Image (cartoon, rainbow, N blue to C red; front, top):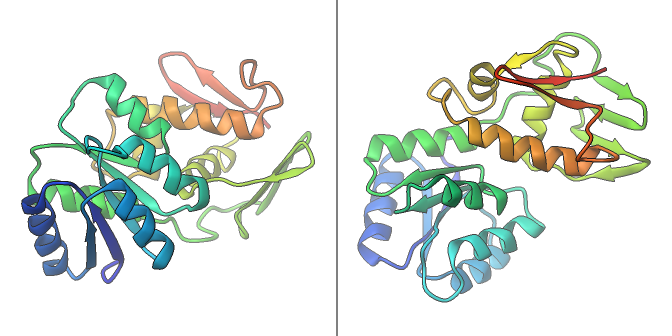
Length: 228
């Protein structure tokens, strides 16, 4: 997705400048904001394909900004953080981020995360039926529409792609690494916490009782399975 429009949100002007230069050199369009509040305003005024969002800003921090953006948009979001603790990474994903990268990071690492978050699986790549039903759950793989309990539910692009991969391989345990590489890309495989957070989010949206799932099942020590 060269040419994609990216919003950089960081309170450090040098980091904003370096990221903007790096992105433009790779063929992206880049704008920047120095705070969460400014990012929200820019986001309301213009359209972006991806947001690079610092987690540790003064005022409205990255997690709060992420939640605010995610409440009304499916834009790809990558969180930037100096923290490497798992709880902080999970907080970023829980807030709606698609991915995160820990500072300090190299330009190649940043660009890999950008490409992974902009990555969208094309329509109709899977063989088999495009409309899948299981009880009061229904997913149309062609139109990307999901209904659960008689109501259409909104999924983020990554949530949809994870669910699509699982429903396209029903009743088969899919290993963690295979899922990560199918949805995020070949550079992934160890980020099991991504799957825990995203599966939990999906269960809240499609399961009648998320604490006792009947569709998205955990296969201990292996991965996940969609029960059809």
